[in-house]
Amino acid sequence: MNWEIDNNFCHRVTSSNESEAELKEAVLEAADYAFDLLHENIEDDSMFCLFDWNFAKQRLLIAVTDPSKKKLAKHTVELTLTGYASHIADKEDQQEQIQLWVHNHITTAANFLQFSLVAAIIADGDVDSSILL
Image 1 (cartoon, rainbow, N blue to C red):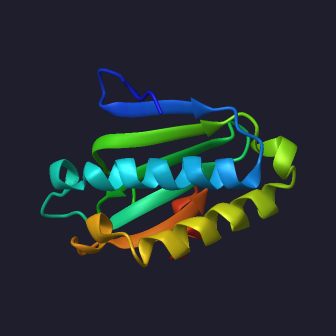
Image 2: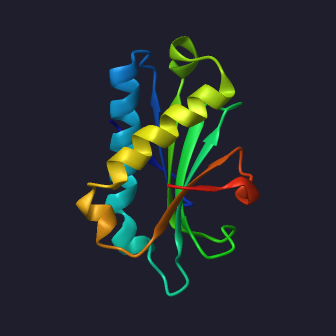
Image 3: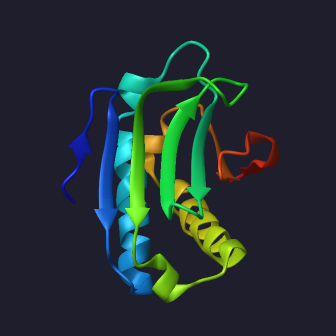
């Protein structure tokens, strides 16, 4: 993937894939990309690695946060999936599938496991509805 980095250290990429295998690959590649940035993102108060699925924007935001889940670390990763709705159109089904992919992936992701972060998924920026992975 060709990542673009803006002045606020947001790393962005868009994927137009529509097949489940390609969508999963894009999500896991974005997760690994975010995990590779952890050494630059970890601060004394870092606690969560949040995966925020925004249904309206079809965007997955991955960010390290403090315990309040509101203060984001320096680097964030955004993956927009323009073809996801062609695969699954339902909001809850999309969220559930991403949750499953990420949950299974982090159990073996060495570059994530070397840090003491709690992984959680949220929807549309609602940190009060976070689900631990």
